[in-house]
Amino acid sequence: MQRLKKNLARSLVIIALSVIIIVLIAGFTDISLTIKALKKISAKWLMMVCLLLICDWFAEALTVKIFAVSYRTKVSLKYLFKSTLIGSFFSAITPFSTGGQPAQIAFMNKRGVEYGEATALFVSRFIVYQVVITLLGAFGVYTAHDILSRNITKFALLAFFGFVLNSAVLFFLLIFSINRNLVEWLVKALIKPLAFLRLIKNQAEAVEKTLNQIKLFHKCMIRSMSNLSLLSFAFLVTVCQMIARVSVTYFVARSVQVNCSYVNTIMFQLVLFLVVSLIPTPGAMGASESGYVLFFSFLFGPQTVATLLLWRFFTYYVNIIVGGLTTAHEIKVLSRFDSE
Image (cartoon, rainbow, N blue to C red; front, side, top):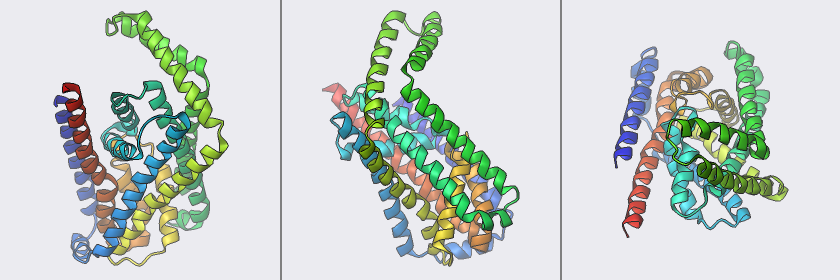
């Protein structure tokens, strides 16, 4: 309960900071135009946005399920959907979105799945996701380069930075997944100072348990990385997930009566994801809002801030709200299991 309260407090602080950033951005525009645009919101377009969010979550859960079937891991698609919401909550409130997968692994372990196996599930899914976002981002840069370079100063530098950073993360993930000796060396190097500080009581036992989980992890990773049909299916589902995610911007714009090109909107959003996805603030806070204005102001015009408010709400705040409630429910369920 104490941990839940701490996460709730962190969420409220992050939401407050994000709102402050949006208010500062809105201060440089005509606020009356933003209010006017928000008064004309169309419910039918927002229903489409909600549907896209559900498709996004479901596609991510399905991707993990694909790897779970390969590993013969006994975990239902229904629970993986719940796990996706939990992951989205912790990703939204932690720097670099690093809290999502560890939280999912920890909760799944309480459901009886070995740490090594659970880690392999989410690392496999993240590798596929990283490949997709890097390739689609590069495609977005290639497709929309002429338009964006005319409207954004040093666009090429931004795109290059995003591509290199995402490619580097993908490279190190693959090395981590394939090179078992390197991971074992890192584990031993980390456990030794922890034992010296007496944070770990039995160093030999901790090393043995961790190495057993690493062995299981690499066994699962080799199985998934060597199965081309499995990877192809996971890749296709993740592409569908990304299309749903980037399409939110278009439908949000249409909800406030902005007539814009669907193709241009999703291409711009793909590039924006590529550029800001690895910004170290929780939810890429600050970079996402300013990047959105930079990429879409010449496309959405006076309604840019109105679309920003709606886009940020559905792509960030909803993850905190729905994910936070789901996390609280899972903690309640697990505490009931522990008491039985």
